[in-house]
Amino acid sequence: MGNKQDAVKLQERKERFKLGGGPEKVARQHAKGRLTARERVEKLLDPGTFLEIGLLGHSDDHAIAEKSAGDGMVAGYGKIEGRTVGVVAHDKTVMSGTGGHTGGMKQGRVVTRCEMRGWPLITLGDGGGGRVHTLLGVRNAGVGAGYMGNIKREPRLMPIITAILGECYGDPAFRSGLSDFIIVTKGAAVGISGPPVIRAGIGESITDEELGGWEVHAKNGQASRIAENEEDCFKIIRDLLGFLPSNAALPPPVKPTKDPPDRREESLLTIVPDQINRAYDMVSLVRRVVDDGIVFPVRPDFGKCVHTLLGRFNGQPTGIIASNPLYQAGAVDADGCDKVRLFIELCGTFNLPLVFFHDIPGMLVGTKVERERMITRAMDMMVAHANATVPKITVYIRKSYGLGTYAMNAMGAMTDLVVAWPSAEISFMGAEPAVKLVFRREWEATPEAERDAFVERKVQEFRVGTSAWAAGGMMIVDDVIDPRDTRRVIIQGLELGMGAYPDWSEQKRLIREQRFMR
Image (cartoon, rainbow, N blue to C red; front, side):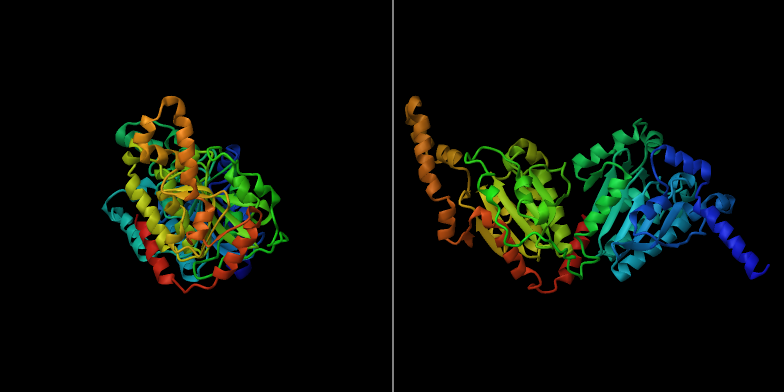
């Protein structure tokens, strides 16, 4: 057979393999409102940039070779806004998206190239894990050793993003657990094993959604974001990469803005209620100081006592950690500690400076949080603060009491710049409970009709020593600022700090490795 005939045969075979499991299974995937693996890759990447590897791969089991196009995996490289990324997508139309040895080799090749070249790695999950009938027996009993070896050997200093687009169990679930960012699409599910395996193993009958649907993972913090649909998921991925460098050796990409760096925001004079126990929307406050009012929330439905956001200041991508007065008055609980720790580790690894906005009455106390290992989780968060080598700026907005002050990065956490609004109160605890504790006997001895007046008088005396003026006078803060100048001051602080710190790559490797072994 000549070259011309071979070329025709090659093209025919490639076109057939591009159909995955064939037209009927493609139609079945579309009927669920889902795209095929190859359609997803094309939607995610810049048009015409996908370079596929292993298109002609198939199962090494000859009995199913011809019906296992790509061995259930689409893999290769492409660009997002001009930056190279590696992509692995499970093909649900081929044997339910289960994986075999050939598919695993394709995936491994992309992962290795991304590690070597410092390219972001994106997994589009929609598969049932390993192909059971090919994994049975002692031959594959040690497959998990590969995971553990890779986890220990490769701290992976490039961003790893996993999108859960269908029912994902086994390998795609494990991969998500090694990711920096997990997006779960509504209607999808992810777990260690799927309902059939669970039913066969322990007799529990459960649906995909009940087991590991989007609501489960939004609330437990496994999901970094929830996507409304696949198109929304791809937008989230692209937006996220706009904040991150391609790897930890690079600075994050600066995006030009027309928002003036010295813009004064008059509304900040009235956004915070005068009454210290009145709640308000902290995200609305943050939007007024970042570029163009744009923020990117991370884990918004988990650890709601605190907000973790990505934003920009004069084009500089920045991590933002802000109290949430609308939930528990901003008191940090155990989930909040985990949320802050994970976010600091993300920003610390990828060179994003951190800005903290305080309005926190302290750490949550009581039996519930103690049963959730609050002490250890709080200290893990403190260690993350101490290990973060990126520039850090703290803004005291209103109250900041007790351990909560350090949970939100106070002066003692090697913060580069600490400023306070005139409304700030900084103390071991709030004025009213402090008065009732310190002056308990005097309060009890006071006639009941006069107790409120007694407390109010002592509170006013107490607040003299907790005010922003007292903090400025004792160098607890670097300056007390006009709220309207918050944006300008943060940008000045960031300009001083960015690029002025040494290369901490080895420390980052150790922190990253600890994160994967946690």
